[in-house]
Image (cartoon, rainbow, N blue to C red; front, side, top):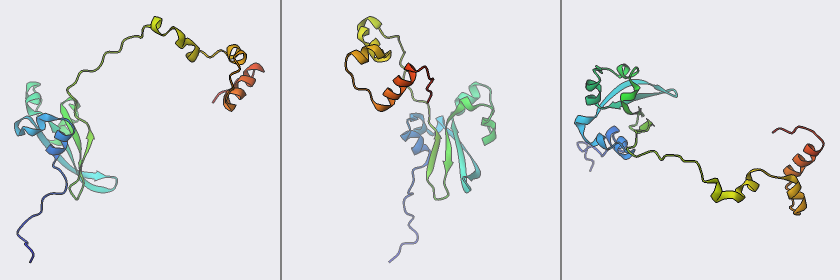
Length: 153
């Protein structure tokens, strides 16, 4: 009738699965990731905090990491952190770094957008002469400006 010896599958993914789903592909390899845990409290609930780091990077930097608090001074080693709720749900607080290039920002070519100035710098005289209907807030602002009153929002 009931099989008490059979355990059901976990409802929530493990820490490693959560990190892989968040984009940390090295979490699949057990040798490239060490996870440290510490008991604590989050919003009044008992949880287990965790931090994941690459032990190879720590030894290359001559850093000895043996406990959760050892990573406090070396946040650059932490690949992902979060907590595990009592029922097993894994909550990832810091997202792992994605391996993609950051786009380089370049100034726009203003010559290609010569007509954009009229959208950025509004001219009240041109607006009046063209018969444009102003919205109520714009009309209040315009009348206040014509009377010399400073309007701030």
